[in-house]
Amino acid sequence: MIATKTNPTTEDQVIEVISWMLNTPPSHIHPYSSLQDDLYLDGIDTLLLIAKLESCFDVYLTPEEAESIETIRDMVSYFLKRQAA
Image 1 (cartoon, rainbow, N blue to C red):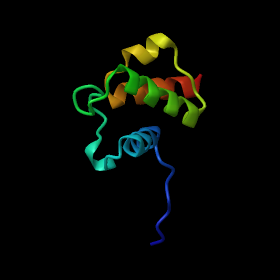
Image 2: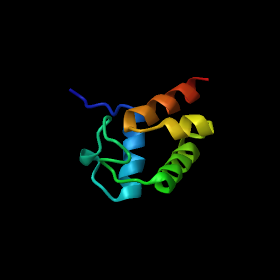
Image 3: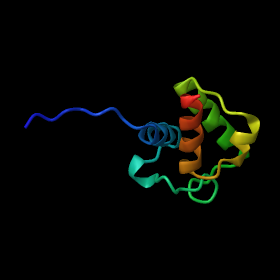
């Protein structure tokens, strides 16, 4: 059987960017990881991460959306919603 390369999901892409920014293996970042409690990001770090992801995806979140993000899953959800719009 020939192996085919599948396109990475938005979640995979978000985790890859976070992994690169935090110099943490992707295996240590999960959809339910809390930005503050698990990844130890403060408000500024979170905003910088969101700005980097907005640039990568060419999608921009409202300040209210950015403020409400608490987990990786929240982040992925907002980026998927914005990409679909």
